[in-house]
Structures are given as C-alpha cells and as structure tokens.
Length: 126
Image 1 (cartoon, rainbow, N blue to C red):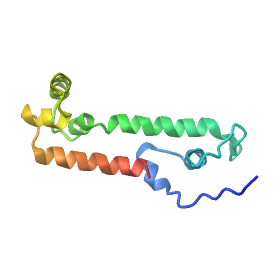
Image 2: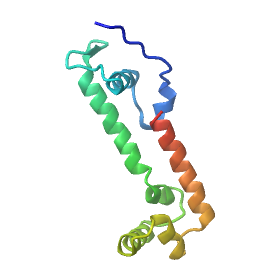
Image 3: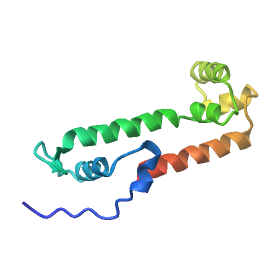
Image 4: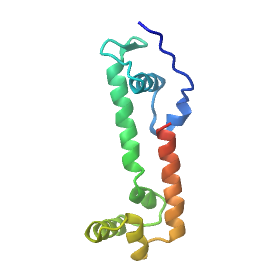
C-alpha cells in the first residue's frame, strides 16, 4: 500500500457545521480517493463518518442560501422571500434582483449578505 499524507487539516475551518476530527479525516481521505470500505478511523468504519460529514455540510449549505441569510439577518421576512422567489421563477431573474425590484432590500444589504454567504461557503469548501 502506498503512503497517504494528509496535511493542513484545520478543524476550525469546518466548525460552522460541527464536523468532528474523525469526520474531517474521513472527508480528506475520500476527497483524495483513498477511502475504502475497509478504512477505519480510530477504530470506526470511515464510510459513515464521511457520510455524516457530507450531510452536515449540505445542511449548512441549505441554511446559507441567500434568502435564509437575509431572513436570519432581519433584512426580509419569510413572506417576502416567498414573494421574491415567485418573481425570480416567473420572470427568470436572479433572486437578488427580484428582492431589490420588490423593495425588500437594498443593493448594499444584498452585497453584504452575498459576501457573508461566499465567506461561509469558502470556509466549507477549503
């Protein structure tokens, strides 16, 4: 078996969704294509660990959608998001454009939230 070397794993980069160290190692092994059905991490099968990692990351991605972040930030209400999503779909325009056109947020609020979203997602994909 060839040697596998994993470096620069920073658990803090994944703290946004609560990944454990074992899950992070399983993810790293899967990411480089060496995770097998027989892989154990601290005596545990690695496959469920990597699946847990991906599930947690997907949960965070769902909660970091633009509309959710705007609601969490108190910029818009859930009802406004629903109306803007309807406009987004029917007019085939970006959600941010729909939110601004409907007067639910300003360009500055949108830009700040998009920056926040990009930073969170950048950390998740590191």
